[in-house]
Length: 124
View 1 (cartoon, rainbow, N blue to C red):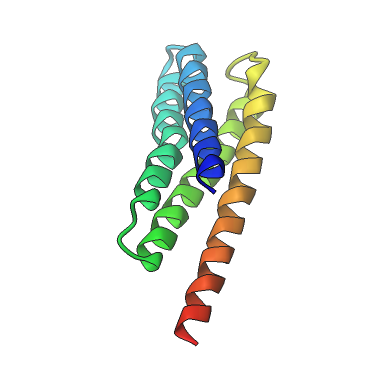
View 2 (cartoon, helix red, strand yellow):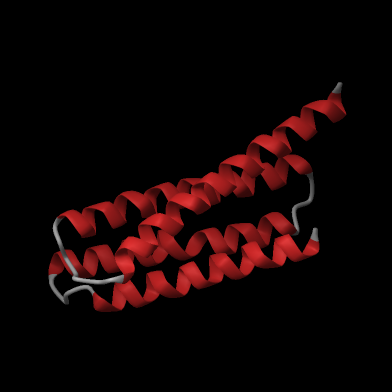
């Protein structure tokens, strides 16, 4: 179990680094700077939220932290789609980021569902 936790943490850190790299490639225009700031905040937040969830004080707290991470991933996904559609950069990493973000959304969704199921089975 600890190995899976570590793998997801490392995956989120790698994702964060690639988001930072992308933000540094965005043009130094008003729009580019806006998107750089936005995607840096939302794209690095899931790693922080996962770290907080790992040290949660309760199962409810764990679920809450994961939900915040999920919201940030969804925000990042839309931001990536806008960057691609505009296009603001010609980055080969953009497709990988979109795919990885979508996979991380699925992982967070599954983790939240499992944690909620486990929480309700404890209450029953």
